[in-house]
Length: 116
Length: 428
Image 1 (tube, chains in turn yellow, red):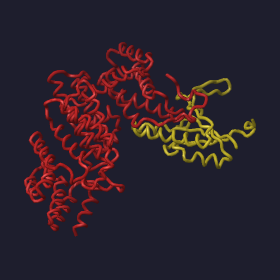
Image 2 (cartoon, one colour; image 1 turned 120 degrees about the horizontal axis):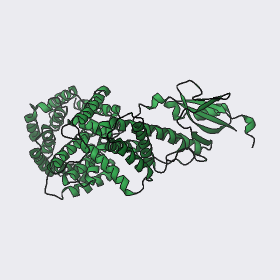
Image 3 (cartoon, helix red, strand yellow; image 1 turned 180 degrees about the horizontal axis):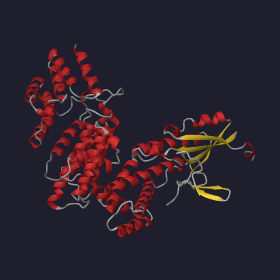
């Protein structure tokens, strides 16, 4: 069993067009996914990142973010457990973020840090 | 403000079922609240700020779950955005310092499980409805604006309810907001005779909104049901206020009793089910309860409005165990009364159905012939459809088929088309 980070990138232009009712529907789907993952016992945690663009430090030089130039913004992450990348991906494929046009990056936490 | 995602293990386990239409309803309340503070000329800003707050909620709560007081959370975030907008001079608002002070003070008071702030918000919502329904605005504009601001509907949702394109609705909203600015409409409630007149137009707009949802000739079913429920919510809001006169209760009763039967009007395949064949166990007992509660309150005064009579007709249907056990002479008597109060060819058409039950199909057909030259019914599919039904009952097979075919030529929705085709097949 290993831990995997799911980094959720938002495309802000996609959300702006949703009506309040559609936003609530979306929220219910997101929460539904967390609930399911939690019930199945593989959700370890999640955090939403603040909405600013953050800071980037290179050498001693500090600039305003974001780090990458893409129009997608890293919005938050989930930490899940899985046996393999295949299983981690499989557990992520039904995340509603994908349905709403977002991107999810799946990254395994280095196995050396898994030993407790 | 409590930031979400700060807990040790957020997002896990603590998510609970959200309140139905929470976003839509809170959107309406906060837009109304901010419009009172910013002034009606800044509805756009209020809407923008609320949209932003909802988006922030969506993005935070997806990770952290719904907070214990979501309404207070949204209100607070919207207030902060409004303050930002004022400070950054995105808008020039009169009385700016006073305004900033008011919003800031409101933010400092810990929001509210107490009754007062909630009642205050309801009051703002009510004022907003009364402004949206000002008699100088056209009913179509009033409906669209009410749905957009108080109802929390998007332009696309309003468009799909009215089967209009989005650009038309968007233009209608721009125009009506300009009218509000130009005519200097305010959120102050009128008094005396003006209040009575304003109330007439508020009730009329709510009634039209309901009818738009109930008479499903066109548009998406789900959105249309939402229109009925929104009309019910607005009517209940007015009824619960100090302005809740008997005719307001009659309107609530009418809407609740009709909406209670809404889901039984279509079967599992989305096909139309007429009253006689409806599974009455599918009628919504909660709404029927709401309907009768308000019906009782509506007869408190001496006044008899068309709403009273329509509510009484709906109540009579709701109380009957079947089509056969319905008190049709009473229904017919009520239609006679309604026709006197509100002479309309559509009412006359509905009355003919009651005539058929009491005096038989031939008598009803004679009444229908009188309606043939009504311009309002010229393209109304129900006129030939009802005639077809009555002719079929009277055993006149060929003329019945012709009438149903005529109905098919007029505009009606898919379930209605399938219904008419089935009728024709059965007769052939």
